[in-house]
Length: 500
Image 1 (cartoon, rainbow, N blue to C red):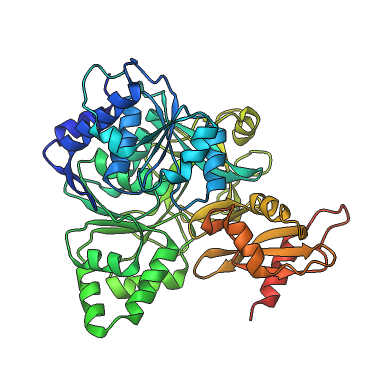
Image 2 (tube, helix red, strand yellow):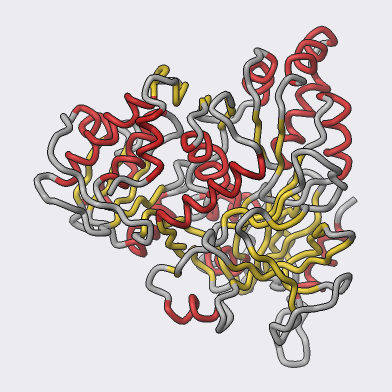
């Protein structure tokens, strides 16, 4: 059995699938490259049988070919973030337990020592794509796992959410219906491809529908503006911080450039913002510049997208719309009982888009679901005139910055590993650009004079860039309740009172 994603690619064989720095490639070329990758990975075996394959490949043609090749071989794709330091990459290797690691030649050196130590097969992408296809590829049932995406939780280090082929298909079918995808669409992609936003909402949705995906390996405001202004794009998706930076670039540009950019962006049929709350000033400024009222939606790694404003209809600032096709959503109290309309409650989601488990964490998986299968998102919302408005998170230890969900506990563990840190507390402080600004209150050990710059350098070597605190404050002690627990709201107040 060939999954519908690959069957549809054959239907669109002669159409352009991907435009990337490596060139322009058709659906037929993507299918052939995926089969070549699969043949190499199988190495004579009939099926990878769910073996996990980690891959460190920048956004572009090679990424798509490797991802599809792992799937076609019956493997589970584990994308690794090219922005992450070695310590985070090694965590993924240790947690995912892959048999094989695939790396782009320019990135292979970052994994070579780790792969050797762990006795993993390390293959570069050039070797994979040079392989010739041939032989019979395995049967792929929808219930088979296909991808593991790492996401932060209240327990600290990122954990792997296991998605099946059926989950991914349900997600793209839901988005295709809600957002009106067609083969005539052309979408710009510069979002990171270790995250559901870029992988499913953009890349896989485009390829499911026979559309064209224009890939920029990195985000540069001027590059994005020039691409938007050049015409031809029908869809654009980004996070609030990206829209804020694009607005800043527009403000700094010469008048004739501003006019060209604004005029060129208007023909795009739909622009979407997600992964974090969209500040109303950003929404309004973007609409004034481009004529586009951004469509906000809500989702997360474990569930894909769950809520969305309409393509046609009212989009109220601060609201994320209604449940997407095929997705069940409810608001509940602390006893998992539905709350009346107009009463705040925790968002719970159920349906075929929802992941199956956290890799190797049965207790955390069980705790994440109600007995009747509703996933507990940890986010709190209220329904007003049929639309959901996100109020915040039920855990103070989960932060959202620049569209990325991160664990305060993970950052605290890293900072405490520094010999000069006696204790610390990490919180998110409201920020107009980042959504939440990651801040760390630090208690230094006696006689220590460690500086903010030293702690930032220490954190950068162990954490992804977006997890590194943007602000440090040194305090004599952390505020605690009568039971000795650090009171995070009081820590947050320290930073807010310190802000000019």
